[in-house]
Image 1: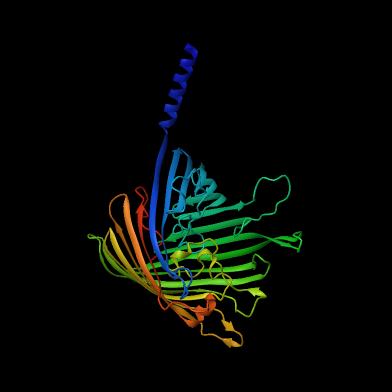
Image 2 (image 1 turned 90 degrees about the vertical axis):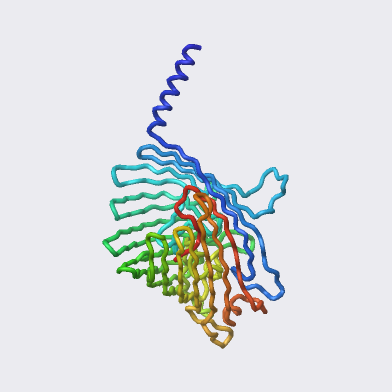
Length: 437
């Protein structure tokens, strides 16, 4: 008995000594978002009723840190109010969002392994998809070299459906089987730049009428680009990005596509003491597309893992949830304005003019490329240390061409969307979600 007590005391002392060099923290977030959709995501028909619901996400986040090592786990529950019984025993809505360990190797190197967010640049190509409450994380191995303003990240992922005794076919939809990434960023005075290479391998399986596999390939699509190009000159910021895709698309067609954007942001007035400012941004983004009567080569750029809600209007017609991919591409010309009343309150008004990048053909007729105009009004208010309120109203004035691409016979005259969101994030710097300026 005495030996057991001594052992217990020794163990407690050892743990106490270990904890004195380590930190353990538990935090979380809750998001509640009522929405009314009367055309969001796709145009709504004259015989359809608007959708209304309350979406919910809660996360429990734990972090254990000691010298040279960090361990992180994030568990989340994503659901719609009322989609489970009040007396439920279990449901499928609880999931693991992140689980990774990061180890320092020397002064500037770190290795990060496990399920993790890849959230870079303006989240056009690699983003954590925070607006979609389920978000996005990758099973990935990442090496990081960071010294002063220079960062070099590289790594990859290899995905399988399970732990089988034979075979390597991968059948999970809309995911890569193999991926590799190299990303570099640096900053010199007023100029900032990043460069990216992403290799994306998708499983392709063709079967005969009996279900027997006749073809099994992995097709690789490469994306190279300059995701961040920024130069500041006084109160003016010039920024842009460029991506190019080549290789093979998931069904084996040759890829040749691009995404190009440029914009200028002007701070018109600013009061640092009050925390107020007024900014305007004018710019464009062009994502290449494929003519509707051509199928031999895929010229449609796909922003594969981006937070697409933050671009091309908040009504999510383009590229969100796979919408508008492998289509006629997009030209987006926009003007944005934001007034920051103080450090806690802002309003933002955006206008987008959309057009197809490639030809839209209907039989022998080539349609007008103009797709429509969208107006987005947003606001955000920080109530206190824990709570922020965010909301918005959007409306699109769709063209006949866009209606033809949507594929329904007749649409409502008014197509709009509205939401309000309560965001509880007491420990996070980002108090708002999905608002990009």
